[in-house]
Image (tube, rainbow over all chains, first blue to last red; front, side, top):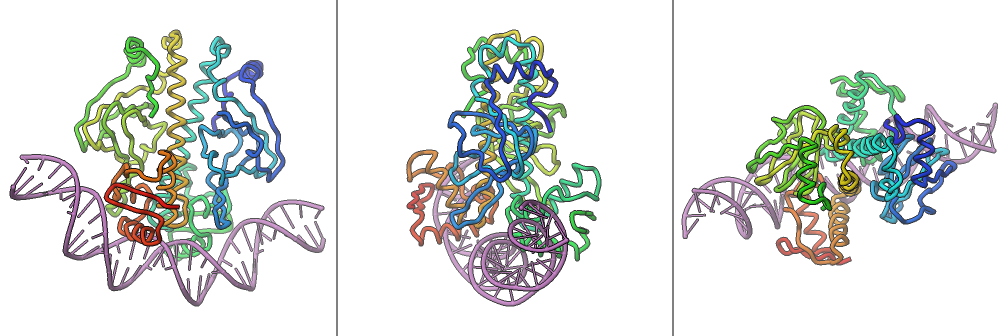
Length: 209
Length: 209
DNA sequence: CGTAAAATGTTGCAAATGCAACATTCATTT
DNA sequence: AAATGAATGTTGCATTTGCAACATTTTACG
């Protein structure tokens, strides 16, 4: 995963963070981190750990909208965190760096020659995020649970270049990711196994297509 | 909708396009525009007209993944156009400007003082795209067709600040956008009308909640 | 290590949804 | 203005899916 400070020296990273007035915060596991963030436009970098964006339904259901790991970023310009029903919760101990969005193009920063690298990194991160969203949309628009599951496993397999791999998340999380009922997904996976499309042993997946 | 060349003078836009080696192409309606694009990383700006990204199912179904209008952009780093099942078709006569991605940070361009504005515009476009995707994901993860429809209309209403507005697309397109069967959506809208949540007269929508 | 919590697998049942087929209205083109 | 094609509305029917409830297994944590 790309990093906002890739190819910038340690010294210049410090300088950059100072010029950007970047703030770093540490959070424990299972903390709602957006309850105390200022309302201006910002970007937030997950330095370490991971967070989940959770949509809280009016009748108590929770849907994981997305999960971000170290190196990824979010922000009110980037993510859907304006909606009050959405919370952002740490999955583990997590460190976040906050940067005001307008600072990215402030007067001082553009004098530095590492600025161009920083901009490239930022654009790369944004396009990576877009790719992630596009992939999910492609899955979500599948007409049936079966197609969603197959497309997901096919993607994962192609990313890794092998037909055997480990689930990168729990089946419960996958059901949320694909936005289908967990038990219905479990049933469908059973059918897929019976029909010879899949083998599942715990977290070990083998696709046969 | 933001524009990549916003707040840059006509003269400087020309200069910028020259430095970026930007190419402009014109297409007629209903043309598959990605069949003849070079494979390098690029961004494409919809100068005028509109295009649709269509996923072509293995059994002949077509799903509109997204629609882009004038001012919006796409590209292999941004959109999911790597997949061979996806085509990009013009909805009307359309003009597209292509820019090589790497040119965005080339040596010559960074000497110009309008560069910072250009970068700001580019980042704004990318974050706008992300917001668009996030909105769609939020709709697609709704558990039922009813919730998808209601959330869509609620969004549209809030964007405009009024409970009466016109459909910005056809119902057929909306069904694709929400990834539900058109006739099932039509039926559900009928129920919503009966239950007093919606009024529909042709393209005129009134939500009552 | 033991216990609580989370994840998983399963199944019956009701409800929602997709699909097909058709009539009707609306829009576009010549 | 006529004609063609696209969009819309409707409905029966089969299938898929969500939901609830439960047993079992795995994981996390004190």
